[in-house]
Length: 456
Image 1 (tube, rainbow, N blue to C red):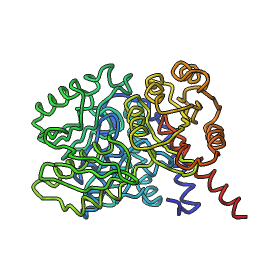
Image 2 (cartoon, one colour):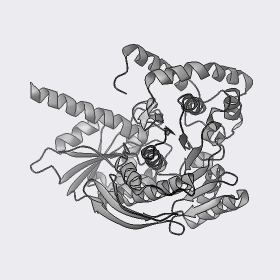
Image 3 (cartoon, one colour):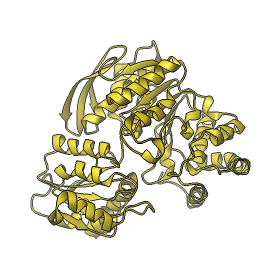
Image 4 (cartoon, one colour):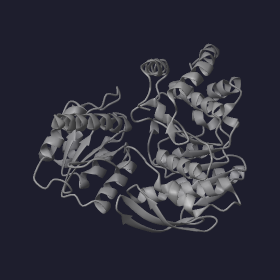
């Protein structure tokens, strides 16, 4: 992705600008009408390859990355569509595990963009950013061509733009409260919307769910005659041990046991994501047994940027894209059980429409002090409001504020320069995918500059 020519980069930036000029990602009109008409006029590229469709509240992107890695290791050409992105929108459309080549993206955009304008003229509401980039991914995958699409739901399920696929296998990761203004006020209502990706006579993998979510998901599966595999019943995680750089797990799947799998990701929730990914791949291959070496290699090669990602050492800087209480609890539990830091400084920037209090309460036990700040998004919660909430949860003496994420990172890293800091101190940056994406870029730049300075 770094080898893009200046001309191509200019075009890529212009395409992003054109896409962003459309309805923003967080503005939703709950209907498939426009995307259905758009893919229809494009010749239904999303139906030219089989798909695995991943919905749920947390863990969707990582599960998609795991499924992609497994399928690729088994010799298939893969297309993976995930959202949102951390640093570049090209990350959303991956072919064979790598972000789409700039030239391929430009070609696909030139091919499909005239139809965006045509659809804009036919409907009351224009094609949105998310609908446009979804159609772009479908077309790029058909053009490549791929053997299998791994498609992550953007929001919800039933009326999400990705739901024009006819998935062979659906996966639903744990469901929690998020996007309540669109999906419903209760777990049951949210689960009913997310259940919309379960297809007629299809197969659905259900990660561990609350009872009220499970009821809705199983109701939908029964209505459409889908086969179901549930974590803890039809499949299970048999063992999990913390290992250097990740964990060692064993899973009982639909067709047997898979032992000694090294997963280079931290946290119990990642073992659950891995199990769901493996079962999805088993279901996709049907009666065919999976090669254990390919399974092990597929998991060993998984990366999940921005998900409990250790991006720097001395001081240890960890990035996690938790943006709701469910995600915040998962990273807090991982910090407590899998690391041994004496002192953790949190840097938190949240979106104003999130359950800030719930997120802060989940993070409080693992942060000795917190620096609240903002990211560059218009929806970012302002520092004054976030400081008030953080003071309620942490107490005034543990809360610090900085106007920018860069200033927060500078402050935390400066404070972390103490004797014997290497493994005893950590900085955890979290609160939103935007925060983590911007922090990733900022931390990389900061330490590149420092190392260049020390070389001179």
